[in-house]
Image (tube, rainbow, N blue to C red):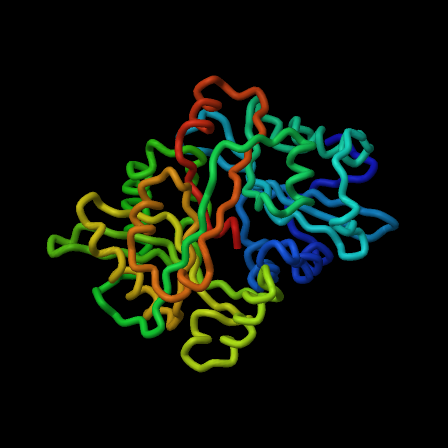
Length: 354
């Protein structure tokens, strides 16, 4: 591999990189939720096909990001998901100093070379890169604009919560003997989607299903426990409400500065069984003894409609629905792949967002 002057590419996370992730703060003060993800270290050590891109200044790790190479179900070319973009606190610019620029610094040139395939899988004659960006995050938005990422859709985050979750139906934590059967069901379920990959499926063995009287799977979902430290909410009033409710018993189950919750992905709903979804989700919450679960869904997908139509609970009324742009950069893609990315709803993995 050719060596760069400022950037290096590795395929395993270093201790210094994991330490930087531990410090990473996400969000834009005053404009979005500002928080730290407490499971980042474990997840970074369990990624599939990662390429960690490091920037070193003065012999210190100044910043990093990760590209995850994925074979896609419906595209002919692989996709690289961009995550864990983080800068060391001493290297960050204040948001007020961020200005749009056309300068081609050596660092940007090297990153552009990586996006053109340098130091990535040499077999990839064509590929695409994708990410999810909060439109209010000026730093991330500027970088994506500079490197030629274009929006192709929007995802929305929805939260399902219950103060007193009960076991409403008999759920099953899917045994590994049935993983291939479930993978086949999901492949059919998402055959009209873009960006479909199941690299994060069955993480920690936490895929749950509901069967009917004939033992046929009618609902399924991957559910991952997560833990965030919420540092700040946008707006003076929301920040005050968060800190007040965090001290109130029972209410602080669903709204707390130490936010423990589930993320749900790979949602499978056999047509005609949407009415069981709420009881299914509540039963999963009861299994983990948690009180809320987060979905990230393309707003043009039937899964979004199914979840949106539920009684989502108290937390959804406190915290409004938020959206993010789904952005893509293509490299020598076929017409089929480009059209699919622009026209089909995207498969979103909440593992990638948390």
